Amino acid sequence: MFAKIFFISALGLLFIFALSNCDKRADVPEAAKTEEVTVGLTPSTQEVRSEFFTLGLNRLKIIKTIDKSTKELVATPSLRGGIKISNHSNDILDIQGVTIQYLDGAGNPIPFKTGEKMVTVSTFWTDLSPGKELESSLDVTIPMAAVKANLLNKIQVRVVYVPSPLKRETIQVPVKMIVE
Image (cartoon, rainbow, N blue to C red; front, side, top):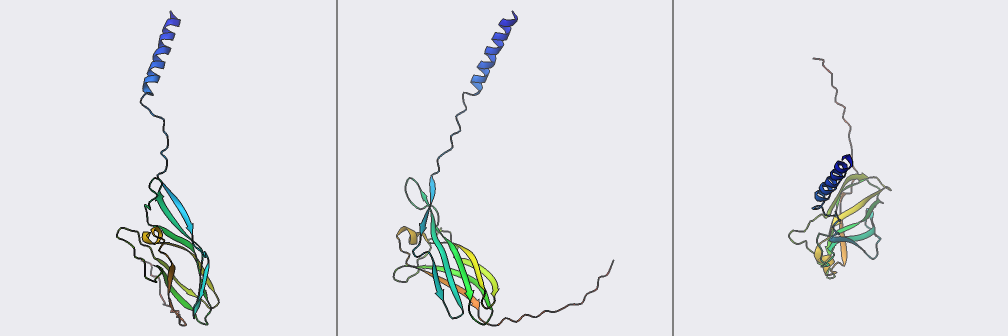
């Protein structure tokens, strides 16, 4: 008698367990619909000398996100790499910032379209002493049109700086603490 009750209870538990898992589907992760593609620029390293400083760009590459099925761009591409500014003047350079513009084969700017993410400025706000270097990473966006139609021919880098001896003054302000 005890064996019969045990057997029926075991069957009942198996039945309940089977029914409770019937509607659950195996959690299969959905395959990614997009992928990141890296496109290297040639040459990937550039160095240009101006009157006051030398600008170096290195490890330049374009990162674009494309839809796997349609092979279309789904996000504004990025230009990434490194940037180095070397002061070869006799004065301190007050580096304000760096802006990037993209040019086609005729030297015309390639515009960003409405809705594209636009990040074309890297801020520095630093003083660069004579003979010193400043290195930073570069991560800005590039117009989709420049990548889609392979229009990109030149990158124009604008460095905003003040080429004069900076004078600094320290002022001491006397104060007294009053306990209240």
